[in-house]
Structure formats: C-alpha cells, structure tokens
Image (cartoon, rainbow, N blue to C red; front, side, top):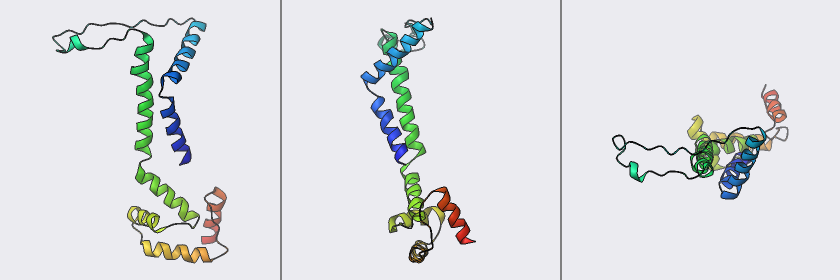
Length: 155
C-alpha cells in the first residue's frame, strides 16, 4: 500500500512547471536528434454555426503550451484519479485488515471491515485471533512462506 501512496505522490510532484520543462526539453532534443519534425500549433477557426462561443475559444501560441495543458497535466491528473478509483478507501481498509489478520494484529475496526465485506462474525473472528495468538506454533506475517505455512498448519 505504501508503494501506491508513493506512486500517487510522485505523480502529484511531477505536476509542476520545472518537471514539465525537463520532460519537454528532453523530448525536443530527441526529436532533433532523430530528425523528427516538431509540428506547429494549428489555429483552426471553428464555425460559429457549430459553436456559438467560437470567438471566446482559447488558442495556444506554442506547442509547449498546448502539450502542457492538453497532454501533460491531463495525463497526470488521469493517472492520479485512476489510482484513487482503483485503490479506494474501502479497498485500502480491506487490504490492511487482511494484512493485520495474517500478522494476528487485527483490531476491532478492521474486524468490522472484514465482517461487512465477507459476512463473517466479528466476535468469532476476534476470538479465533486470540486463540491463534496464544498458540506459539502459529506463524505470523504475510510473505509467501508464511502463507504456505498457514495452509500446511491448517491441514
């Protein structure tokens, strides 16, 4: 979960003028090096028959301005929003609850989350956690080895 939060923070930190200019200048340098023409900004007139607000439409002066607002910032915003949607607060709570359950460190709030999501009794879950915690032979942790050990222990 920490890696998701750090990825989100990295995307947000990229959303500034300095980072954009670094990326833009590097891309421009590559285009020159590979002999790729950098297209000019096209100023298209929109017919007032189709758009009654055509006179107030914004036109970009440079390719840099156009890419900054239409590509760079939009892409970063989409990535942050997608991360937020994919890892919503409820999902994060479930992931943390299961992780703490595997470590036998589950608290009442996390047990309530698991009860709601998986339709299990919170009281029974907490009782099982106490029994397992008292048993010194039970493995704790959330690595593949620990999970394998749990499966063997349950057989």
